[in-house]
Length: 196
Image 1 (tube, rainbow, N blue to C red):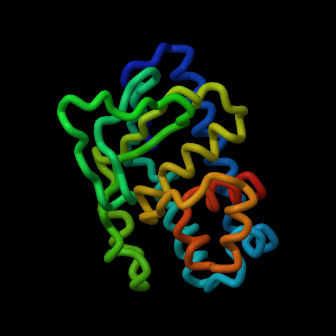
Image 2: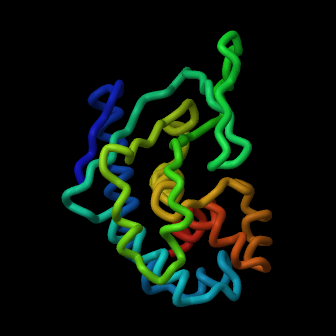
């Protein structure tokens, strides 16, 4: 994977690169851990879930892909999402959404029809220049594992078409009772990554 940076200091770039490397090590463990699967995804279809985890593994390890990290610290967002796939531009005179308290975000690519059909070939089709992760105010305040899982979380939006139903641990755990919701929530993958 090639990493690019827009607007970060050399020191910040080093932190992001280390976080990405840590995420890769953690992602390597996701394919062989059964117990955390049940904790975070309940009785989800194991074939589908493993297909999704393998797709993530393939994308984050792809040597010919580029992820661009964009500095949005202190920025505002002028697009409001009712869901990841229902964007609405804010009025021109709107001050936008303050990114205080936000770790990172991505602009999703609507690929819902490509995934879940049993053909993972389409999963790899998207991620060229569109693989941009915007790091916001809280990113550098997280610990090493949290920053690594934040990157993984954001990539799930791009690769697996996940939503942000919740970031709260207890609520994400409760999604395991509804496996489709758990597999559709980006933070379930983040917590799962940390558990492996």
